[in-house]
Length: 343
Image 1 (cartoon, rainbow, N blue to C red):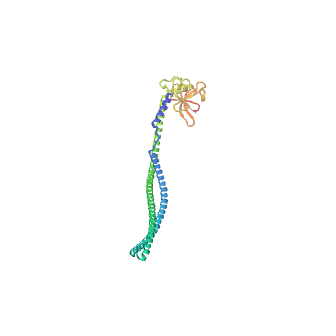
Image 2 (cartoon, helix red, strand yellow; image 1 turned 30 degrees about the horizontal axis):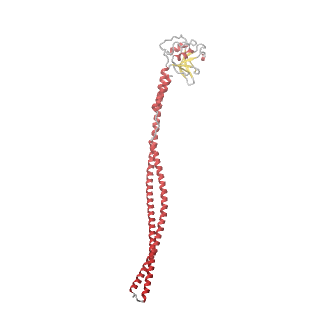
Image 3 (cartoon, rainbow, N blue to C red; image 1 turned 135 degrees about the vertical axis):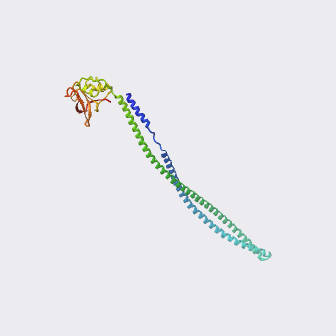
């Protein structure tokens, strides 16, 4: 149990040494920021287009209004000019009549007539001047409205120029940001390639580390799995017995492991690995009566070869053979057998 905990601790240590944090690319953040900028610029461009369309409609409408106001100014100016000409003519006539009145003898019969004429012309001239003043007021108001309309028109045109300039700047900026985004996306792809290579290298490194840890752990297990080596204990088994033969060819086995069928338990007690897998150099243990073994004592043999068809070839000794001291060779199925491994 203590050995198992040691192995697990070793593997966990290697995992912790090679564990890498999640990669957060600054390029990804920069791409997101650039995409947001592009979205904002595109929104601004759309708003500018909409504003420009509205301004174009306002400018067209205002231009029509300017033309209308100018037509009204021209019409009022024509009326004013006509009235002014009439006023001038009437002024000339009144002045002439006034001059005639001054030249006429006050006691003459024509004086009264001339005076009445002067007074009548003066009255008509006054009315004419009032009319001219009103028409002049109309012209002034029309000109003021026309000037106001012209100013509004010029302001709209100036606004449109500003919007068009902003639109051009935004489109240039959009082109620049798109070029930057393309570079960033290319950089991100390059980073992905680098990350993939790094991940592959890291995975290989982790695999190698785990394999080393497993190998070291297995070595530790193997080291602790070595049984008691009895190579220097001599051979106390009776000559001609299967146990004597195996002790002769595998001195490391125990000297007092009992009958052949008892060797598996005895070897395990001495710290040897005992399982059902044949291996060259291992000891094959036959249970009592198994595969022709003695029905009471069982049998043991020394594995010489492991075959691909599930059988193994072993050498053996025993009084039942022509050569009791061995070796006598035989091939059997490994199914149901026990095998004692030196390591």
